[in-house]
Length: 189
Image 1 (tube, one colour):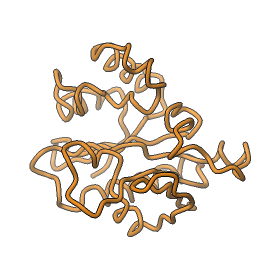
Image 2 (image 1 turned 180 degrees about the vertical axis):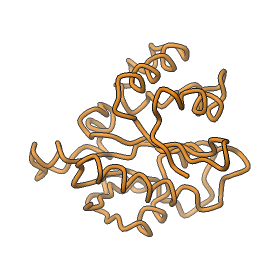
Image 3 (image 1 turned 30 degrees about the vertical axis):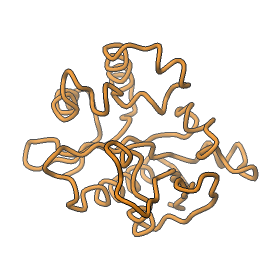
């Protein structure tokens, strides 16, 4: 079961991320929203509070995957223009030919988090498919991502941006390659 992260589901995300840990070393999924220096200057608790504010303001900044009543996975996604780092980064910035109108109709998938014990069970692909449908229903025409592609085992934390092969299986196409291991991929919804 996949559900948008609404205020009533906030405790489920806190449990998934870990109340002290905050997912990947206290990121609280704020990394893609901020410039690097701004993210670095923001304490872990402020990141948590900032994400909670986004949840309370709406729309939901992503989806939770559940097994029974336990949140086991997370996909962050939303309008491209709201993800500052994704928008400006060399690997994930829009294509030169993308129009402002196209960018306004584009959602992005900047990251995933899957609970230990539920990894390597195709949950990332299921989250991606649910996220694609969520974006389409929200009016997006395109879904962009910049996952990692690797010919060697991933190191701890590298897979949070998604795995390229999962995106290909979900119908994404590579639209740019500005980094050897990070293709910019797009799905038309």
